Length: 115
Image (cartoon, rainbow, N blue to C red; front, side, top):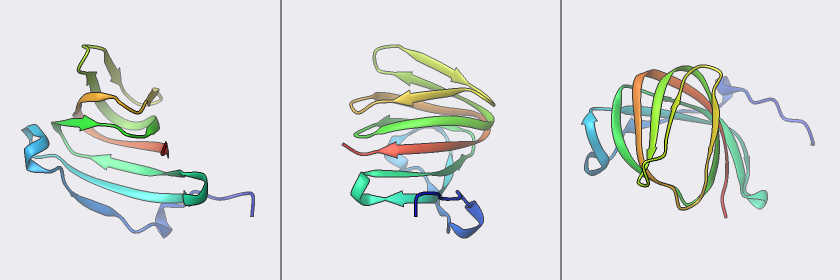
């Protein structure tokens, strides 16, 4: 099959809080829905939701993000900052380290490619 509908309704949520040792503020909870998975291609896609909070992140993979609702601020350890809201898109590359802050409960579409 070469065409795939990305249907959240058929994807069970992977939900839970951010690991306490990574949380910098709030009590953020997340839920991810994997709507496409091609392990042989090292590629997956889906939706993600998060409540308000701020936590440390470290990426080993590429991630394309398209914000559907809410607002976030992603800040690299080098001081680079992206403030994003509905309709904004950005890419995080392997080796990115910094913080992810959800300032309004948010939802995003994502595509991840592992190295």
